[in-house]
Image (cartoon, rainbow, N blue to C red):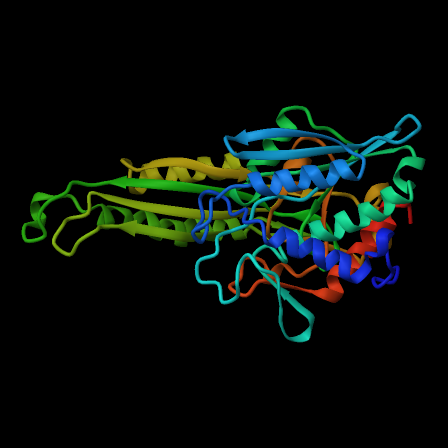
Length: 387
């Protein structure tokens, strides 16, 4: 892999990519469902910054609203000759919330061992800064214009909410021959990932005073047999479905919420399930299994699908995946999902790739190593220039 300390256009190199990351971290882009730390949630400022930066690099830029104040950004670098292939580079604009962080969330700070801290430093503003620095170098040298590849940067809103922005972009007609979703993969090419199914189960009851519980219908008690069935029957059934690359299916009962006061009989209990799916197990089949458990153990419960994203497996023989592998650090398969899942569901071969370690994503002291940031810039530059 090229030397990560190599300088790019305009004397950038180490200082340039770090400066880009500092600018990105300073733009709060917490998604609206999460705590934004007294800032305005959403991706509008981040999208405006990205659009301006990409226009200055020579791209044709359009904004695609996901919702009010939440645009995705699509920037097209058209080659001088007729394009014979289209590659989509897909960072995301949003971050998770900032409650409980031990470092300033919107200021890039240096820690021990070359750590660069801040919300999004790892997921995924670090990979985004590395890509932008590489684009500045490649666009400045006109390297990406000399080939026959159309490069599209599609920066999506709402990725942390189940890839809402990516789903909207592909539904609106965004298409290409290959998608690289920017994620902290330690520069390994993630060519396979499990699918995701998140569901809510609402169990109704009847409120009453806690001193007269017989007058009510305790929703928590009603939900307990369903929770036990999820543990004792659904979980083993999911684990029995094993994929040679991605392993077993799984379920986590992440939310079990009912009741508000000591002296009130709960009139509602809510269960939230996070289910991870290997390729041979479609979400519809799991939903059918859940409905059967509800009918057996708690017929009055209502099931709602919160989010769903299919698994994907991209063959190693894919030429674009192979080109990325040559500038990266090997292949990988993961449990988590990202915009690559959505691209694959729309028929586009996809991978996830970028500097940083996913274990630092969403953490209270989120960081990326500066050396990784530099290596990411070098890897993206080599990929763009045809290494």
